[in-house]
Image 1 (cartoon, rainbow, N blue to C red):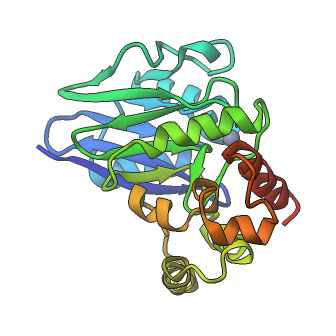
Image 2: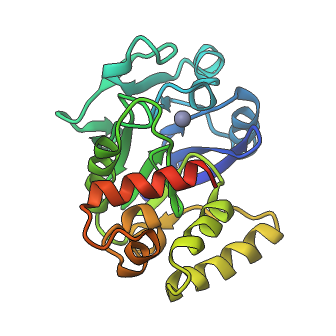
Image 3: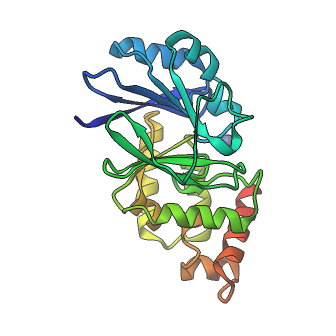
Length: 255
Ligand SMILES: [Zn+2]
């Protein structure tokens, strides 16, 4: 049985995700910002929630935990190291132990910096990764609780995932991220062609998610500190990766 992933738009630009197995009742929601859109998505598919997964504690990723847990009795799984900040946490997970979702195994990657205990749920066999607010389509999260070196290490960990891994992130920021990317690497043809697709998609109000790891490696400036064009734009031809990453992040904060 394949695992199905479906997007649930929440708030203004958040995505929660339904993750379920057809016909068996196994059904999780990833990062529910708010309960109502999740309830509607479940009702439309005749599903009941068994699990709630959180990548990090921010309210726009956990706001639905308590009401959805009360309604469905779903178990909440999230970063053990942030147990005190994840509402109604039942199952604390960390990188030392894979987490079992019915017959499916999720590797937990600890990817701190946006928050100090941010994690990704990675279903290796199914090639599905939920990256929360660490890796976005053509972007990365702000460094609220970590250093550039920490975020670079976190992104490097994600870059070791297979190229065909589908990336499901926490927000629809892709268009703005791509516009920023073009300021650093206007000659990147993969980036230009992706932006044409993203612009067409957003003009129809369609989501740009999921992405893939190969597409991110080709177009996401935060993963491309080795790009000669980016380094030239920044005047940082001889700097190390962390310094280049830090400068890209600094510029994005002001973009
Ligand atoms: Zn966040």
